[in-house]
Length: 440
Image (cartoon, rainbow, N blue to C red; front, side, top):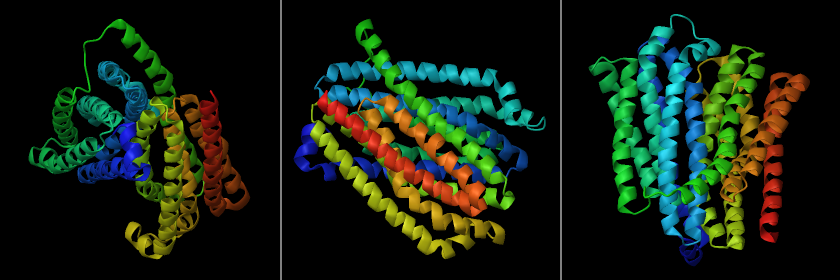
């Protein structure tokens, strides 16, 4: 979708058309991870623990591919906004070649360092054989996931979110269907989950990349001048974006450590609450994927005023939508609690969580949106600053201060306060950055 189409049919309609496919795609991805865990849990404690040790390693892959995808979307969409489709094709080729090679190197490095990594993560000797039999296949699936995601990013950069949303849905449903076949019928156990992912991701790649070539959205007739220019742009945006993606897991570990001081029931309730939070922010996550190509097109075509209107429209929607979601959690808490936990102590903590933390979801949504928008505007360091301030200047300090002043209820109030402060700060920093762009 080019800037002229967005302006002619209206920004609100364009935003809806770009966002709704990504909502279904994100929901499908979340569902496949849950189904994976469900089937693997039936194999026993050790396979489930081995899967658990892949989570922080998977986050390194996710941070890499999302950071590179953010950079690719920002660069290519601005190039297309300036009506230079040939350069955008070459940029797509550089992204795929560089990203695939770098993801392969990362996979090999993680396999080579698996011993020290497992020791650092606290894996016992009984887990090592299970991990050794699983990680080589799983790392191949992680590499394929990165390659697949890069193809989706190139589609989004071209203004097409329907195809990647559909592919996310198809790959996830196929993965969920193949899980019991590979794990139990073929008796591959834990490795079967990785093989199911390899098959589904391979099919997604086979459908995604030929389409890129048919649409002339990617080219490998590269010469060094555009290659070096693209590499510089990718590193200037991609590196801060990758760091920004790796900050939340670090913050989550520190927050869990604080909560652990209040006992196992508190940790269990906190874990359930964070999972509910992730589902609560699905629409915002979809917007963080759909907004960058739209903003990039408008900025590339010199329509900064329209970009500002689009961002304001998305921010107002996030505030209204997340407020409704927050109030629904409070209103439905008595009905939700028995469904997610039969333990009375866990339910009591979770109820306190639902009465406080969801009220900060509008501000948290604004913060997430502003990180995405600032990357799209070509201000990756400002996006990284917003992400870092949210976690380490507001959220974690407010958690600690709240716990110190008011125990566990105070900690939950601290989570609410930290997100509110972060949302206001993110909006102020965005406004300052946009003012600089408009004046410069």
